[in-house]
Image (cartoon, protein in one colour):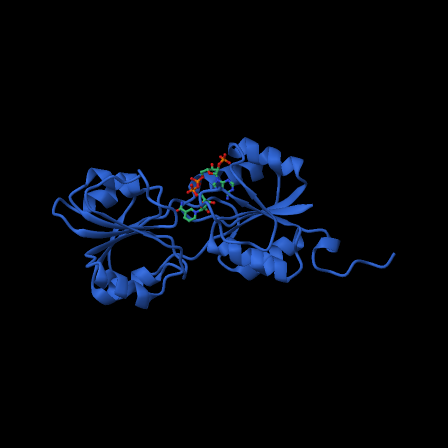
Length: 257
Ligand code: NAP
């Protein structure tokens, strides 16, 4: 009997470490398989899509899953919607572990936009030096504004996704602290930052750096979250996992025969 943790985030990795440290090893982390070399995790991992909500519901039934934690990225809306649907179909207990959004602070210059298309528009017609930190998948949207000079930071190589005359590519995995982000933005003469409103601490350094440098930030809004119960605290998710594993695998001593 296993708790299924939908991952691909630093929160899921933190939960995996907490579960392993508590002896809760009957958990299974699920990754989409977007990165060629994912971070090593101390729990069993499966990789690849389930085949929509129906496929996930079948996986839950076939693998004696006792509960589900949706610890995916706030912008991974499809898998979260599938999880909510599969949970409704199977009656499985479920919890969302999502990072808190960022609060706007004095000195922040945020241009809030609802999506990628609007993010491209708001950059305007004049060429600018744009720092793209939206991951690899959304980069294609910026191909229709080839006048800008883009600095694109992604984990995987950009490849053919963004073909523009002026592209500097930086392949790196967070966390990134504010000092390093300030140095990078100065070195690359960044004029505007484009980011998803991902929230959390590990990628907040760029937002802080932009504030310090007085740079505008094109802030792409989060998609709506599902109606599943939610927490921002790894300890709460850990308690949920523990409550849904049988006693012998929940880090408790087994009862005498
Ligand atoms: P998405 O659009 O919500 O999901 C697309 C499809 O990918 C899903 O329908 C599902 O395929 C599969 N999938 C996604 N997450 C999965 C998981 N944890 N385990 C198994 N299958 C999964 O997701 P996305 O935005 O492409 O993100 C993919 C993964 O990268 C997520 O796990 C997310 O946590 C992580 N991530 C995303 C972002 C972001 O900005 N979107 C940033 C950092 C990390 P099936 O329908 O076939 O099941």
